[in-house]
Image 1 (cartoon, rainbow, N blue to C red):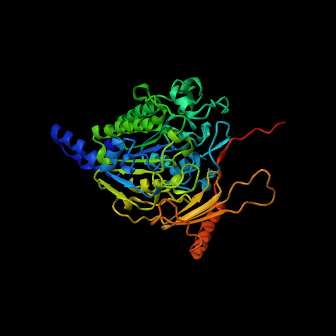
Image 2: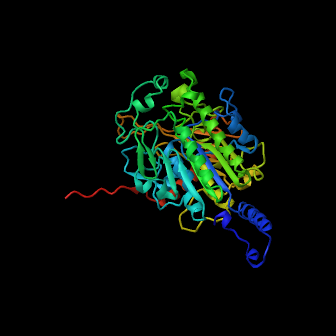
Image 3: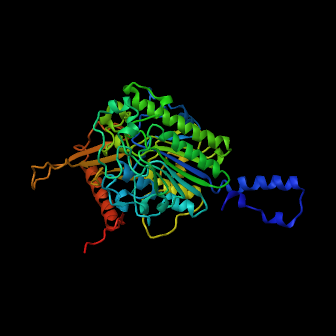
Length: 483
């Protein structure tokens, strides 16, 4: 139901002066429907670390606009993605399900991949679209580049963005530059001279290559256009930024030629664009009926040094199941509904966004028979107690590796088998941490608490067995059988 479609029945039965009638009509839509159907904006950056925002302790990167969202909202200090790499993480956010449950757990998609997120999965966009919301995806999708798997097949009304990571080339991922990141940064024109990343609108490629120097700003332009066009009805904007995934690029007017400042420059540019979106919401008088959620798809790509971020106090980064790989910065903003200037350590995850958004929109999820793994965490807006008590950890390639239950975290990390090994599999490294006392995972307690390890290992396998038994298929391209 669109907001301005609300027409109180009694007004049709009485005669009122035009000025009074106009005043009443202006009042009722905003106040009757807005509380029931708030707007939602999810801003999802790519490879941004836990320590890469001012409000999360950065002393080198200036993020005044995101910090303002935190000052007017709430920071989540124990917020996790469902995987430490792109595609599985995105699948989990949209479906509320572990990547393995929806078949999207085995690393990331590439331009030559023949599968993607099954359009039969029920996404945030599907749910809100069924309630009359306008829905748009603007940014990096990375859940399948085939038309059957792009955003409009998964509940969105429109799509503008790149279909996979910005270090991938259309159509077969060949011909990529093999140059140091500093060299690419110094040559910003390499965005179009050395890469062939496509830009898609709905299902059509409209540019190859897209100019990655301006893509962050162009995403924001599209987002503002969408918000403005739909200010009179409820909307859902999913904005998964391409940056700060390498290679890093920014517009000329914010470019810092010193490659030592490359990552800082990109995050500060993202922050400025977040500010444009937040200011649009404020200027359109939509702040009290809009939620903004800012977070990252996984931790920082540490091997790229000044082109990657920092996990702050956390151990390791992208591609690992240590905290730095999956505990990410999160800011939630909802003036009048989320207490300003607050912070919580409530145990929460991107898995929880679908059921939480459904609850905030006042529309329960349908009983489709498909299990999801998220919880309604709206209670954590004012409490440190979360309905989530555990999270299963899978490696970047989908192997079961661990569990967090309460403050205890157990990891069983098996080294990759070397090519010269035959039947003997390397012994796994076993870790046990108490995150309440050791957020940096520096004290391995595996030898002092064998009973806790046994309990966590049993629970980890029980949950994984259920997920495996009830896993749903991905969409897969059908190849015609040869005659």
